[in-house]
Length: 462
Ligand SMILES: Cc1cc2nc3c(=O)[nH]c(=O)nc-3n(C[C@H](O)[C@H](O)[C@H](O)COP(=O)(O)OP(=O)(O)OC[C@H]3O[C@@H](n4cnc5c(N)ncnc54)[C@H](O)[C@@H]3O)c2cc1C
Image (cartoon, rainbow, N blue to C red):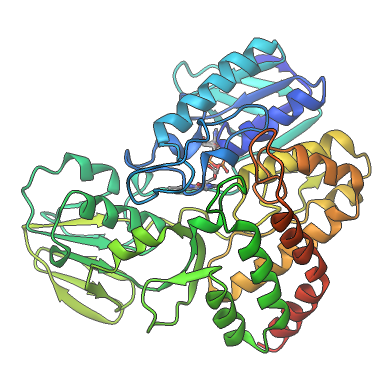
């Protein structure tokens, strides 16, 4: 067994492990060992379908110290008018550069790809079988979010021999051999698979979309740096805060959030029960709405050669149909753990659906604060949402964290400098916020307390 020494052992070189280590590199003199079973950094982006793109602008994804993309505003396609979205290969190449040119070049990081972590600082090379033991002060678990994409596991339902059922990764290999497509799952991956088919001129009537739950969706136009002329980010968040502060009850909260433009839905006649931070543009939504073959009969139980059994019914299928499994959980709702617990640091979201920002924020708190209780207060986890109720729960947890952070001038200053903070920074380097945006941000802060109290009241009444 080889022995290694470092201040920190980071398990996982996905986006969270990378964003955490990056802040340690810039704000401390610490040495770090990074271990991952993948052959290169980037985590699940290595396994993603080839046509995936970030769901949010590149402008605030990655690590704090390095820009991702060129702040280009798309002029074509269904994201036109909005900031560019990196592809998975761009994301993976970016993290590789961060690793090679920054982390390893610093001489303070040792990186062990192709290694399976065990416990108590031990891991083993999947290639050579060599075993390692790390002596360190802190172990950082950057795997707890347990991201699962369809290509790394079999479907959770039964698939009979002879049925063509593939993960979305296989779609670019299709060569006209199918007359129908069944997309299983209506989360963001299902939406992306439908958009891939539509972009390739598959007739919408040839697509059936199995949608066990409808989803409240975020409009990507609202998640843009404020420098974008068409950006509505600050005003929509101000309106959302006001909507949640004034809502009479649960239904009214969603009616108001929808009227403010903060939330959208696929079918205005169906009340969504899912909320997982899926993001689309209105142009993408218009495309998705061309699909009329939406199957709302629960989850798939079994696909056989001539029928698909669902929780609430059966629909026909045949050998000329390709079934695309988009049912993996992506980000699960994990049990919140204390982020700082003795020598363990467990990376979790501290701002809803902003995992990389959260990892960088936690690293800053680790670097800048001593008292563990205070560190945990600042880093109260905001579990990944799943249901409509979770929209309110995560809005509440988010608002509570934001209010705590605003009381600390040092933290507020750090947030304003952080390129991963898409909400308080929201502008590329050197851009000055205009008067109207500043006023909207102030309004949002002013209603903060009222928003918190009203969401608490609505949740208590459920
Ligand atoms: C399709 C898709 C699009 C997304 N788009 C966005 C977006 O636009 N913006 C956004 O903020 N978020 C987005 N997300 C959320 C995304 O999950 C996070 O941004 C982030 O990539 C999660 O990184 P992670 O480090 O937590 O997880 P992972 O990427 O899963 O990294 C964890 C790493 O730990 C390693 N590991 C686990 N266990 C072990 C072990 N025992 N030994 C060794 N290594 C181990 C794994 O190999 C992996 O490399 C998206 C997610 C998906 C699925």
